[in-house]
Length: 166
Image (cartoon, rainbow, N blue to C red; front, side):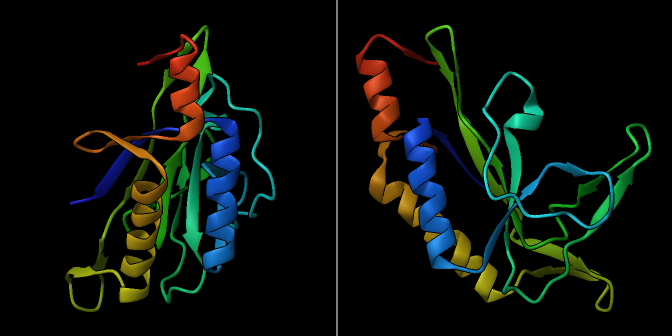
């Protein structure tokens, strides 16, 4: 079962979050798709928009001893990451439009299918500890809203100034 957190995050808070991630582990931000099976890490993220390709990314812990598993999307002719098999966390960014902020999400599968054992096994402890540290950081720096949803200081300010958290 995947682990998931929802959040409302302003651009400034997103920058702080990514700085935390880059300082705490061997981490790469990868795009959702690639024209080749080799996904090149991103230094900066594009401006978030309604286009999901500007909002969906993968956070990869490069120190975990699991390969990045990619697959071809025949319909689109691009490669995608298999998040179930890879040491990655899906990062869907928050997005604000017309005074409404849509939530973002972090989601990580904690198991993968081991071909040798022919069974589901837990991802390495280094990956699980990394996911724990990400969740801890969000919970420490953001306000708890509902069961799995947190709001960053910048998103709280957005709401206090009349914005709607949808």
